[in-house]
Image (cartoon, rainbow over all chains, first blue to last red; front, side, top):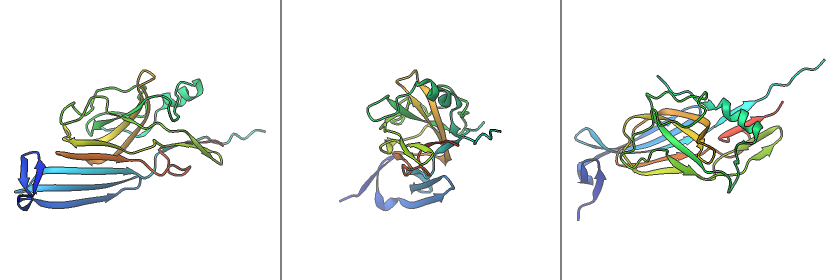
Length: 65
Length: 146
């Protein structure tokens, strides 16, 4: 029973594919991606980007005298 | 060119004018993805298709609707984060992208904020944009008084 992975090149048996994971921990976001390669070519790549910290506006205090 | 992150200056002015209804059940807010070669910026005033991912590979122009949510407050800070992450299913991106623009499609597509991340490509798979913890320190948008 073939274990097919749907790729940009169509369904390909998983045994023919190399899988590799990619992690990146940046200051304001985190990336987790899974790549599937067929003979060195990326034929499927999923990705999650997690925003760790959004954007903020901080008002400065006015000094009244 | 490059995309430049930040809360859109026009959005700050529109907050004062009461333009946006950012609360659960309020305006329809959307988020769109832009190529790494685009030039989106906090100076944007409205959503633009220029530099957006092409409407191919299960990406639709204009991006995805996100779950609007209510603002919270803590100390001197008001904060807001969408109620859920957003996922593009079985996406094949038309190129490398590193930017998401949040905008208000109920209010003439007025721009809210630009978010950037490391350049990514997605091929025949899902892309998920997870939201930060919704608190005064990490929320997607925070505004802090003096």
